[in-house]
Image (cartoon, rainbow, N blue to C red; front, side, top):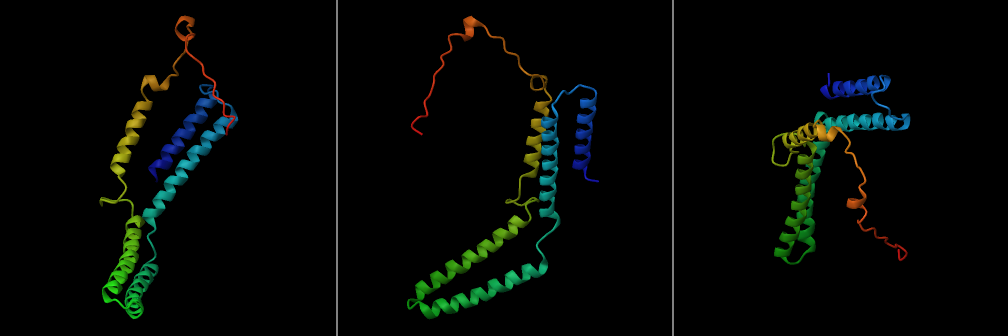
Length: 168
């Protein structure tokens, strides 16, 4: 079973139980938005997992490699025949072929974003950041809403400025 889906189920169950026990007094439109956001999160997680679970089909990868090799040969022949200056022909051929192969190798790196390579997503750091955020949200100061008491001597002298947007 997917651990994230289990945690999502727990969170949804806790929300329902808190709503039934009147611990949470949230209007239905706002509560439905909470469920919507939780659902969007699990959908995005599953979309990210698809990147890792379903690689590019092997025949497609082979066809792309074959076409790049064909392009390599044909580009050299066409540029050599159309450019009278051999050094310029070599530079143009190199630039075009290098660019196409570069895009090909970049796409291979992007196809597998999860791993330990230099270009992979920093999953460990992202998880540590998420854990830090969750720990901070569990602190007492984050769980309680700060109160505000207006004190005339302290807050009345604050200046209020009006800005006109008439020119826009």
